[in-house]
Image (cartoon, rainbow, N blue to C red; front, side, top):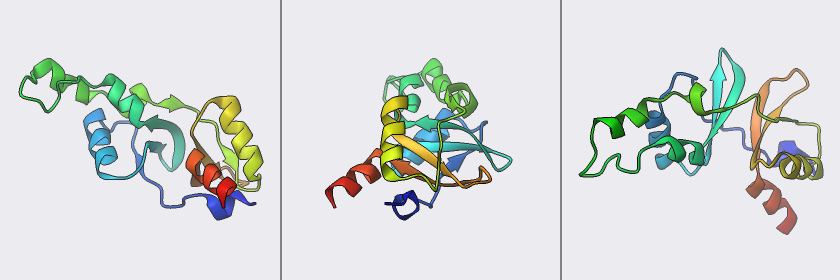
Length: 133
């Protein structure tokens, strides 16, 4: 089956200078686990919800929060993102995508066209959905 039929085209992206606090806010409001980092129309990285949680103080938004806890929310996407993420061409098949995810130990693949333009994303859930349908 074609990746194009399975991928998500409604993309949520952030700028390299967006803060961890902003990314956490986006991730907590939407049913997604990854944010695409885009600069001048080009994909430069990916940030996962785990990346965000890993660099935030566990005391943020609690009654014991202090200045150093709030400071952890000021790091930027460019400081925590996975640079040059593994992508897959839209013309590839679903099995190729699954192999790429396993080989590269990733749970999301940005999908690009022949010109290298970002056009969607494919998650491990999309691959699993294909297998059971």
